[in-house]
Length: 115
Length: 118
Image (cartoon, rainbow over all chains, first blue to last red; front, side):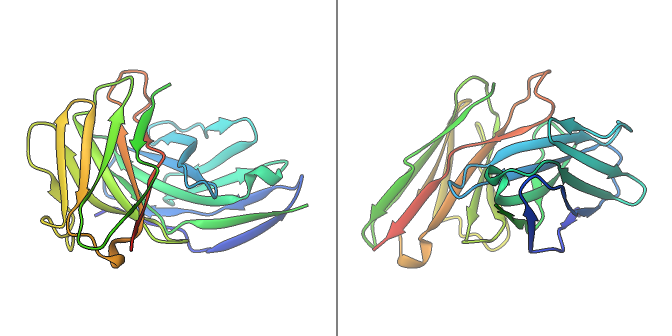
């Protein structure tokens, strides 16, 4: 079975600074996808960024980028120029390549942003 | 983009009654939907996978008779909490994968439902 590990329960970053959230996963599959979701106090799950395992290039979405190390099974999220609105819970998630496969989530990390 | 809508967003019910939560995919057909429960400051716990036209698949430890799931059409799945008790109070959230070619294999989430049983 696949597992996703987020070992840091909380992190804090100064506004405008950069922060990296760690995530590792375990799988024996070759076809899979990795995601970072943001959950603000509203509890809405917001997709931040997505990475296909077959792509070597790290995904980037504006201030958000990932460091995908496939051999090490590591998938960290870097948030640049942190903003107050980035404060939320962040979940790393794994999904097998099947059309109706489920998401496996890490425990999540609470990110606070200091003004 | 793809949208999944969940209703109601908040519901309060009396102990012993049943409450239904709806999850709709608004602009795509979803043969599968997922139901999660989330406790405060915890991760999402998968309860069950609903499958259009067949029985739902429940995760270990989830009571099938307590949490009834029906996937009536390709755009609607419902979760009914039967004979609700205060310990069932929680945040429930649904999700659905968009099988479209350009969806990027992404799963979309509803807004979630807060259930309070008094």
